[in-house]
Amino acid sequence: RYVPALEHAAVMEARVGIRPMPADGFPIVGPVEGRQGLYLAVTHSGVTLCALLGEIVASEVTTGLADERLMAFRPARCVECV
Image (cartoon, rainbow, N blue to C red):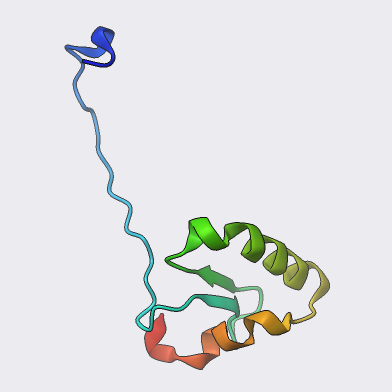
């Protein structure tokens, strides 16, 4: 209806993306203890938080300095969340 040229086209493949949702509903952001070089940024609110999280994560990764705004969301807070 919207693209008449595709009237007889066949769907070759369909994928479903599952949005991450930590068990407690809050983001998990930060380095993973015991896994050098592994940094998580998992959140259900990616669209609304992406600009700020991108800026903070980039700063933490490049400077090695922890941002106080993320302290409540560190991976170590809850093993069951991941």
